[in-house]
Image (cartoon, rainbow, N blue to C red; front, top):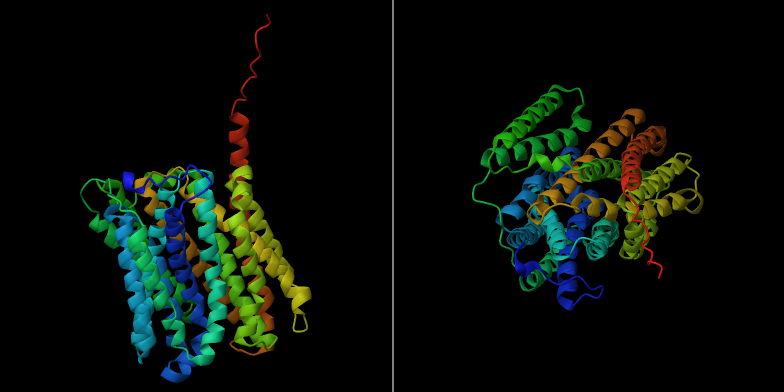
Length: 485
């Protein structure tokens, strides 16, 4: 790592430059998360003005997920090879431009295209942002504290997007696209001034065959997962898409084994903590995104809440994350990431299980709020810990890759979880969309959510067992006694 990146973080008191770097990249990642949810509430207004079909409408969401989840690995490695500062600046500029265009276009296809470009830009900003933090702050308490603050923006962005969308849609749906523009431009200006330069240390040469097969395989996998609930999991097009994605990803692995300059150094996957962080992140977010989808439908369709009321229903969880995440670092330092991840995913399992008892007469305070509180506590404990565990012990020139791997796992896991929950919900509803039909599919869908979360508990538990074994093997230093005179 170049000396220009080595800002001093040995003290618990950081200077203005360090705070500026941290807040700048955190704001951008918060924008990535905010953009996912802010458009969701505005979909009915978009459909009415542009005359989109339901199938086209869902691609306003899915196009973003496709670009984001499909290209994260490429984005992370690009940050390592070309320089994380350079990649971050270009991607933020593209994100701002695509946001502006999305607020101005009058054609559904163009709107979907801008959403894909925004997802693509986010696929490069997210791993670059995480690697900027992990290479700016030394591993240990300083980095843990920085990642905990970083996690506030990523975790709160989705809930904040729901609230902003409810307000902005009252004025006009285009404002949900235009709001990120000035924020992204301000972050870009701050990044140019504050983020230190970085000279990549990897040798010359680029893995173009690996980049092509890896990106194509990831894009096709996410595309197949997103499309499957609508056209059918056993439909020929779905099966062909999965088969082609598998073939491309297997080819990618063979290329990486033989490449002198691999896009993904396969040896990085031998790290047990990193592998558990990625698998845990995928199952954690698969359950979380599926649960949010079910609850949003329940609150609006069954209880008759408005979009803004629904957004405010998630506010307790967002507040716990916002106020708790910056203060979680001492607990992570004391207990270790395996234990805090386990506590977080257990909190989510309990929260999901409690929601299984709801019906059309359930009250928010008695039935919904307890799950929201557990959701916030679980996210506060697990999200920062997953980011820390996925990057600890990784060399600086592979921090972008590690960040890209984790974010890819999160996005693909979220897409798969949402697809499974949607399929179960619509299958049990028998094609109907009313409150009674939704209630018929609610319990099976929540059972799937809880089952995915249980898998994340098992993954986290394996990490705790491994930690205990490592602690048991660590010899205890014998006390030294002064020689008797």
